[in-house]
Amino acid sequence: MTPPLQPAPAALRARRAGIDTYQAPVVYLRADCPLCKSEGFEAQARVELAHGSRTALATVHHVLGDWLGTDEAALSEAAWRLLALREGDTVAIRHPPVLDSLRHLRAKIWGHRLDYPQLLALMRDVAAGRLSDLHLAAFVTACAGEHMSHAETVALTRAMVDVGERLQWPFDPVVDKHCVGGLPGNRTTLLVVPIVTACGLAMPKTSSRAITSPAGTADAMETLAPVALDIAAMRRVVERHGGCIVWGGAVALSPADDVLIRVERPLDLDGTGQMVASVLSKKAAAGARRVLIDIPVGPTAKVRSAGAAHALAKALGEVGAAIGLQVEVMATDGSQPVGRGIGPALEAHDVLAVLQRRPEAPADLRQRALALAGRLLQMGGVAASEAEGLALAAETLDSGRAWTQFAAICDAQGGLREPGTAAHTRTVEAPHEGVVTTIDNRRIAMAAKLAGAPTAPVAGVHMDVRVGMRVARGQPLYTLHAASPGELAYAHHWVQGQRDIVALGESE
Image (cartoon, rainbow, N blue to C red; front, side):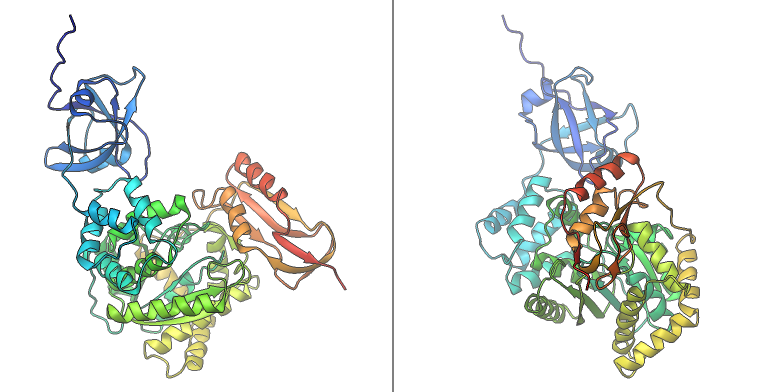
């Protein structure tokens, strides 16, 4: 006679699995445990975890081995932190509340347009962690390409702002800038912030970590100073120095966007509508009112043509105006990487060289940052024209005021430090004499990522040449930097199989 199924326990003993699932809470259960059998918790099911007054939605993964007991639940690091558990605690596991927003998600997948209330419901559930990564990936994919109308983009931007906190500042005006990305080494923000704040403008800069690139602004800044400041700490820095450079994920000003970015990264997707909503929601939430957007244009940049740049600029301007922002756009040269370093620490070394006016400072990074700072100084009313703004920006940098301001901001954020250097390097040399005709932004960025960037801050690529340079056979083209010999070998093996990452034409 088959014994009757024992009733599932009200709670299971919690174990710390010691598994990093990034921001996604996961609970590991024995497939044959009474709870899974009685409640039908299959692998990938969504469940609600509860401990005391804390709850979290998590994804079930089944354990087939005997390392976990049938009366135990193992939790990923994200779930463990959310519930503030300690060894020996118990965790209740139950069916999650029904999410009405999933109806809207399915409608979007089928090509229907969503309005503000529908997107607000979705973003509330996204920010609260109620959607699984499968649902999030479906939403990101459904919005990619040209699948978002102007009205949807405006509604999504407003919804992203409204599910987070919106900062107010005792300054007027508050300015900000953003680069849409796709150009390795383009670390101008770390130069623009100290220049414009040294000139009296307020620029509370919240930046993202890398999504599809070898480094984000927050990644590079973190090699120089702490960036994971909460809102109170951020306010103290801005009120003292007029600006900051912090990680947006720590202040949670647009929390739904931070969750979506987590899914965009492995998918390598950054659709236009969602990118516009992501950028402008963060600017509005941070309290900016005048925003400058840098759009690098080039055959291997994210934006590849003047027409695409014009369309993106139009969308940014119109959506910005709809949510109360003055948005201006600069289309810049995206034909090759900026500076010499690609990767958090390597880019930070370039920034320090420019700020400290060293002879080896990359001129292109300096000039690009000055152009952006000059435009912001004009937008903020400090300069009467763009030319006057450029001259003021150059004087602020050349006099050392920008370096003094940057060091003060770093000190206020927790202390200025020196970026590290990689223990392992390997140089890729020119196979023959010639003139550098092109540098492939996407593939040189891939090389930096395969070498370990941005996870390993010292990893990446150091560029030894620029377009137009004449090189001899055996002359260095670029140098791979890695934290481990395995990552270095992996990246080097990949680049050896690629043709014309740095293309050489015949010399005259």
